[in-house]
Image (tube, rainbow, N blue to C red):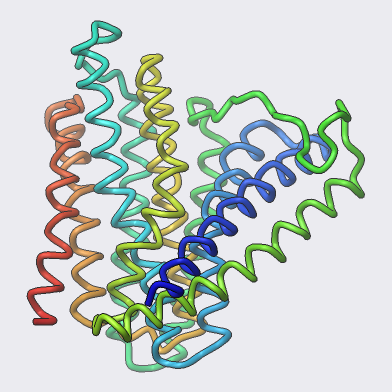
Length: 333
């Protein structure tokens, strides 16, 4: 048991290091190819932050077996739930704390059109992904998976065409494998990206071993354990940069960072699960989807009806997240 816990921690650390190497390398790759800032920030960097869960899911379904497949599906479904609950909670709490410190007010200045578009896209693709579990024919599920990928491609296109699209405009740090070079060459960039992918695959394999072993020892579902652990360890740390943005009163950027990732994690990664697994979602899996949709609906409803977004409504996400372990462990016992 102790060895499995250590293996889990070490593998997650390796995955996070690999994600940083990949994101840094792919951003330099975009710079060298003279891609626009929007393409680099909103697409390439977003893929980098989503890689940990995506890699775990891919490796899990390739290895096969009931326990590995459940852990992979848990990684897929855990990210949207965490983003719509804990990530929103952290952002709302940061606004309130900085307001108490006199750094800013509790009034959030958010581009409702940008955030609203992201949340509407999320509702569409994630509910369609859930419906795929009730389609008996595999051909029908594959068609839904293709639809999810097409929907994300359309979302990216609309985001690029929208002049008010959220910018991730951060300074590009030096290439980790060649930190002294002001403009690293493509071979060095390629080596870093490939090394990152290799490390991520190894970390994902070790993570799956740790999750399935601990789940078997404790007597809980690998899916439940993966839903809870994977996104908190891999996705939530990336979203803590929203705290910096709300401190600087860049609320659209802070929330757009979350909502943009939410669209990717509810379309592309579920498509992977649909393509490579039977995509049978039990009650624990469906519960995570319901909680994610309800949490995002609260923010969307306030923006739509009241034309504003309160940090206090974002705090509800923390309460909704707490309902998941209460519900699933009630079932298990």
